[in-house]
Length: 264
View 1: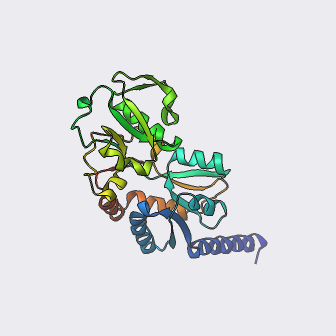
View 2: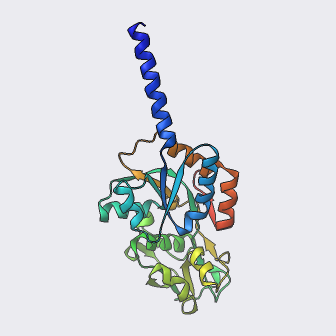
View 3: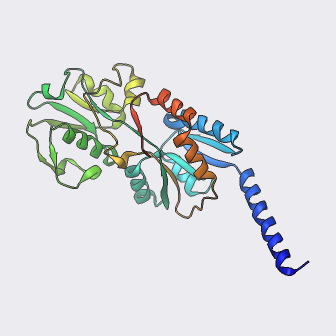
């Protein structure tokens, strides 16, 4: 047999072997409870296409990046860009976004008032006290017309970036998970529908104002290591997550109308 034909056959066998090996390898996806149900459906849909995916669920927000950086999972799905940037800065993780997922809406809630315009002069307003979520709260207050921030600060905004506060609102900073409990003591609070739902004291759909897809930095990302080279499996799984009708139904069930697809 001529050498060039032998080489061609050998190369073909190697490629076929590589593809088969990739198909047999399990793609490991890390996540947290808030995002798990739709991903579980995506795993089921992937299996129907011959793609083996294992979902690894974490109970905290640190382990998914630690585990990914160590190479024990291939990708994680639980964080938006501000969280990832902070993780890279504080933890030294060499990670990068791979593809966008959904954005979960955050709102301004009140037990005392039915509209933003009803808030009195000097109203007490609670927002998150951490740099990741506090800037989002301030952007919401700006969207509501309650204050103005320095141009260009975006999600990195702090109280020092407020340049106008026409109603002289009093801003109180609290831990994000405590904001729902503060609604009895303040006039308005930044709120997360998931925590509102768990508290059971308020309709999560009842926010006076929601943020939305205009804050693209808060789209939850599929994140990989910076040196990750996709062999096609992750791209296929992301495509299933983004476009499968079954996954969309699971997203609707999990988040109702309080999310938006970040890829559309």
